[in-house]
Amino acid sequence: MNLIFLGPPGAGKGTQAQLLEQREGIPQVSTGDILRTAMAAETPLGQQARQYVDQGELVPDDVMIAIIEDRLNQPDARRGFVLDGFPRTLRQARALDRVLAATGRRIDLVLYFDVADDVIVRRLTGRRVCRQTSHIYHVESSPPRRPGRCDIDGSELYQRDDDQEETVRRRLEVYHRETEPLVEFYRRRGLFEPVRNGDIESVHRRLVEILKTRAGSR
Ligand code: AP5
Image 1 (cartoon, rainbow, N blue to C red):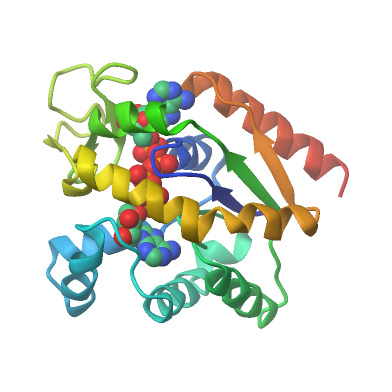
Image 2 (image 1 turned 135 degrees about the vertical axis):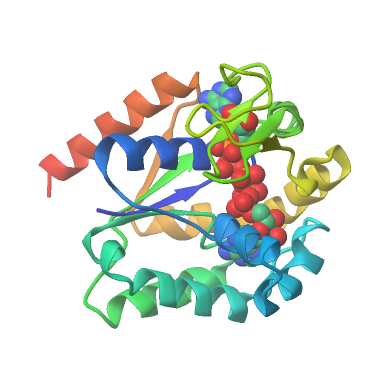
């Protein structure tokens, strides 16, 4: 299935996309991870992106659309994908339709993770991420077995620069202004499915249930 995970920063999109990839084999396509890899390698894309990402602003649409077109045309994504972090503007959403239509594909479902702003600030300021695997932890709700080290490969965990409280609040403003209109855009097309909040495992179970029901009715 071709899925979009929509929701504010820190809603749990990446956490759930990683679980779905590990357990159901649907590839996660995270535009945030693509940008962070480019930033760490200091490629021209990374250098361009950093000025936006570190301020909590969106990277320009044209840059993001080119990235996603290239990624979705790679062989693993031809069999289905979870888009985590794209689209984030109406222009990106319309471009996504065009990119998929060019290869006879379309979006099957948009899963919406709605979490209140004050919960988001707690989640993001406590988030830690593995430098090597990008696996996501939280100092309280999802801690690693060994403090500061990834459970998967033992690499160092770090705090994203854009997870400082001031930047998180800026990202939330940008989300409400630029990305929230996509809720209506997809609701009108009958693709929209809210996922009720809860702990990480119960959200995963709800997600799998929704996907099975939808797959059964296709
Ligand atoms: P990106 O990396 O996409 O960030 P985001 O959308 O802000 O989302 P996050 O990664 O912060 O949150 P998430 O929903 O994945 O939550 P997570 O699972 O980690 O983008 C970063 C930047 O790149 C953007 O600001 C922008 O500059 C740029 N960018 C990227 N895509 C772009 C685009 N398309 N256009 C333009 N610019 C773009 O969970 C958060 C924390 O909560 C974790 O610690 C986790 O352990 C914990 N947690 C998760 N679920 C639960 C739960 N159910 N209960 C308790 N804790 C939980």
